[in-house]
Figure 1 (cartoon, rainbow, N blue to C red):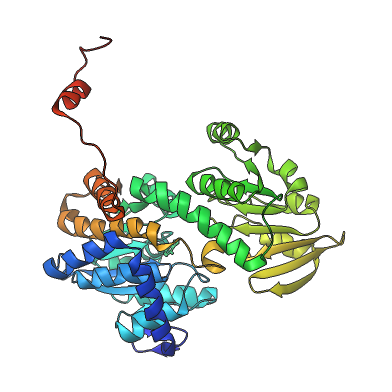
Figure 2 (cartoon, rainbow, N blue to C red; figure 1 turned 60 degrees about the horizontal axis):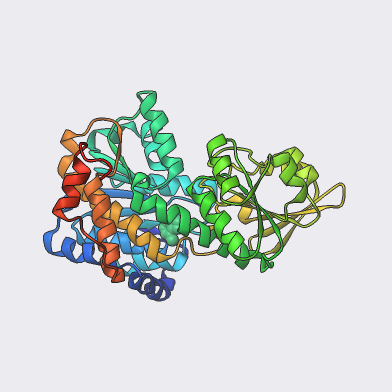
Length: 422
Ligand code: ADE
């Protein structure tokens, strides 16, 4: 439903969205504190932000924080299947934050929503996957003159931006929020770990205990998924291309093998690599009857869906977020959420408690780049250490966890080199 300054499924869902946003807020104490300060100090006054993020109840809390900080915010979806329609309705209808996002939107609508967010002529872009930045740099270069800086939420986006920087194509500075320790240690690991299992469970209701769970990729997301699948009794197999990560997976107690071997024995397959065609035609051909295939990486490229479509003699919608493909051998393969990130498509994404830290970094980085953009070059920057540490400190404080402080003697010892064995 296109409403003034937004395009959402149904504005009448706003009340339900409000409940969900308030529920998430309870678990976001760090962002709450920042929002309170932003409301007083208005550090983002005069700033126009276009944000391309998963439109969830957690993102809504970030949006309200930026708005209360004085920013003029426009929001669009960073994935066609991740939008929570009630939340989009609440932001647009009740909070008057223009939001362009409809769950299940087709590719054309997805990009038209990105363009609508860019119609606001932002000074700052906030991306999750770098689609805003890519659109600006390829199709909307005229906007570059007004843009001071940007932020990027996720690993995939940071990889894209670093290759733009290396090719000297990046035209404004970006802070890689993903690189904050208080982001990827928690969001990528515990967030993706839990929400991926949640998405697959909600979509299939299949028991994990005793199943062979193949996790492709052992980055922070893969580590999280593997550990949570094992926690539910799954027999986890890891596939990797990086020898050190593969070794780490072996020593963490998982079986490690190449995908062609894993394909023969897996019950669940979960891709979290950020790369293309990680599960390919030959893998489908050797899978067991009933294999479940899901992706939790940012883009829907990790599973070669075209190959699966071509191989299948029959395709049937089995239940929400589950498509059944029958191959000519008679074996059935179940693809979840059309290969889009299953945690945000079939469940609600990462729990608010981890998004609290990710979005606290986003809010503080928006403030940081607004103050400092003149000093920044056309590069990808890591999050300043003081912001990262502050987010960690505030989170511990909110959890009621106290930690030690170095004594003067310990500080002196750590900064010296002369003292060894006593
Ligand atoms: N990315 C992963 N989980 C998310 C969530 N709950 N909200 C916004 N972005 C996310």
